[in-house]
Length: 238
Image 1 (spheres, rainbow, N blue to C red):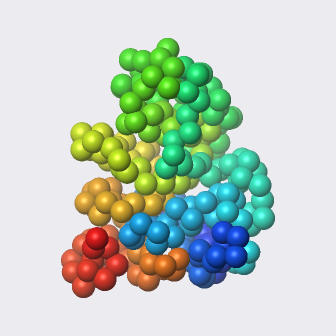
Image 2: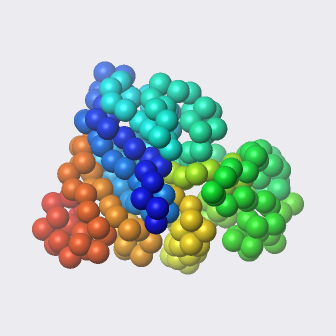
């Protein structure tokens, strides 16, 4: 791991209308890391990802992607800077085939990160390779989730935000998702994910930030967090 910080946030405040959703959120993700935002439903995890991506523009604080300040930028500019986003809602193009969905996400290669092509993605996602001409609307939820990740990778991002990647998926698909994240890490890709499923996150992440009521309450190595039963009970238990 080089230690280069690819994603950095300092003191983010974000709102939905008049309701404040984030309170001074600060975090960083270094090149090659897989980092989790953990917390109960409504803790602010997804809002944090959307704030980083410019979908919920922060009213205060700083966001840097690969050293460049991007707060206030439109989401498409942040994408061009190298940040990929996989929304919880998937948002595939139902009327387009798998291949066509991938082409929508295509962007030029970047230095120092994997260059993704449909063929490479079909090696990572064998199921997609077997249904490359299938319309997105005719796929299962798990298959759509894989397609959304693959489409994001076609943008050749420096780092990827995954919003609740295991939510609502069958256990066999959750296991497949974990395999994919581990392979992306092996490729050197940087990942920040929001997740409620501690067991899923524990098998794939290096570090974690624990959130409650729109603020970071704990940060540390995943191995240490797993041993802290008091922290589990306070912030993670349902």
